[in-house]
Length: 383
Image 1: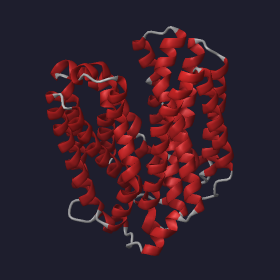
Image 2 (image 1 turned 135 degrees about the horizontal axis):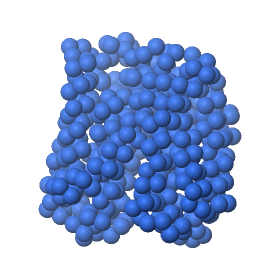
Image 3 (image 1 turned 90 degrees about the vertical axis):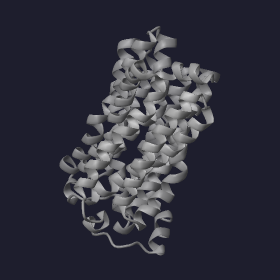
Image 4 (image 1 turned 45 degrees about the vertical axis):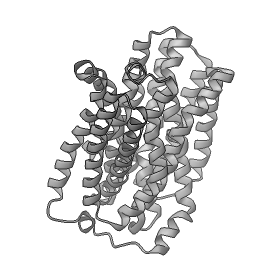
């Protein structure tokens, strides 16, 4: 599941590293080019809950296989569309890829958590969610190399094909049995499904996910232009420095689970509070200090602290609902969280255009403080 999710993440972010080539090839502006990435978040927002409900009712193994094949189709379709210069056909192929990604993410977070003992669940799920920054790094660094060797349209089938390796591994690991039987989860009733959407704890944690993903995508999106436009850093160096932000997530996302399982005795809330609380000094720094060494330090600190909770929340939410509807709870959190990921760069862009970067960083500080307050009021769960 890790390889599948990482491959889908690389496919998701791939166009971002070759935007000038995409714009020249399709004769489109920056907004249209940006939508080739954003459409995957929008697809996840719309489809995450229906996908989660389906995963709670049907065999996960079959669903993951179908999603891997869908991603492969999306990759080939995208290559054909890009080669022909058909923007809307490429856009549609990316939407199909977004569907595959949300299946991998929801299924992976659920089955990984159910396949291990409770005392290491947060560590296991957080390690799985590290597939996102791994995939982003793979896509960011690999896309220019693939484009240089085979042309930029080749980035779509290249990263989609990597998912075949993940699918083969997953099928081999679960050969001859339904994954639902492996985790021994009984079918959910309609009342249990309805209870997820009436559960205050679920919505509290989903809102925390919204705030965390908003901060993550705001900084991930706008730090390169801030470094270039405000601090006179070259675009290439700005991109390399910003890459530190998601890269530290490989350690941070797993670290959040380890902290919870090993240092807080299975308690989840203290780590989430620490995540938002630790982010606030970095955002204060972005507002107050505009020097390259300091900004690099703030980038590393904020990248680590924000992502400390991003993996843990997906374990946390499964522990406030019956086991029969854990995937539905995860998918609800995914939908709400990725809506923040979709919305934050747009809102930040408006703030930057109207009032400048400092206003956007100040807004980010307000979001982090709101996260501290809400996390403090989150339910206590210990395993």
